[in-house]
Image (tube, rainbow, N blue to C red; front, side):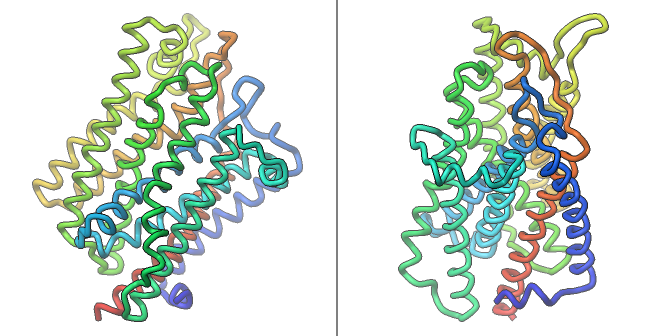
Length: 389
């Protein structure tokens, strides 16, 4: 089936060449980082995780979001998701591949990744994060490809694949739960020291992942005539809307606990993220515009997504999903990780600004993810349209 990825329109090849060009520029940036070291980044002694780990954290949620398609389709036999579930599984493959690339980029020297295997430490959450991420990648490749290949041959998928499909459901929850434990298991960082961090991660995952999938589905509908169906579309809108509302409820809980209880460690970080710290000429507030925009876009997206369903407007649906996706990208891809370092446990404020090389490598990894996704979707859609014809 993979040969279908080598046949496409002019627009398809222009898109792939565009992604390759970004990957090439990012590759040059990575060579600079590899030769010089992580000193070329904007990270410092006080901010040891930057945009690489921020993107990793957010993309784990995008990968876990595929659960909201797999669970209804395979467990509850919700046939309306029959055309879109493979897109969710393949999106998880691309997202996990990007997660692993961001981890490699953050290590500085890629060979250091082997230390997790050569010197396993089961008492470390990093060890278990390696297990769940690679396991989830394997499960989605196996399940997605076997099911699609069976459809290509015109037969029902084999029974032996069912246990792996069922296993992928709790595994999807585990990848974001273990990632949350990486943060809330660090007692020196008060902003992350909350028992609802894992539920917050999952709520945002179940909104951001399906939101991105809905945007892609609408693009595919315009460019390839592949339609996921109105029923599946409406059901996905419901999932995105309620998951997004749950995420903001959890965020409100964080504000209540911090300010009602007057917990300094929680208050100072929230002050930095939403209002800024300092006074006079020394004000630290480089994330304030982003975090405020995140709240505004998220709430606007929630309102618009239900309006789009009522009006059956695909254009409004794309706008609402885009607002929700960007909102949660800012929240998890910037504020959550970077905010945990400011102020430091010693009450020092060291702001983080990514270097040009970091931004280049980040753009290249995102381009690589979309490159992988384009290949997988080209195969999947070609198979489905061919069988329907």
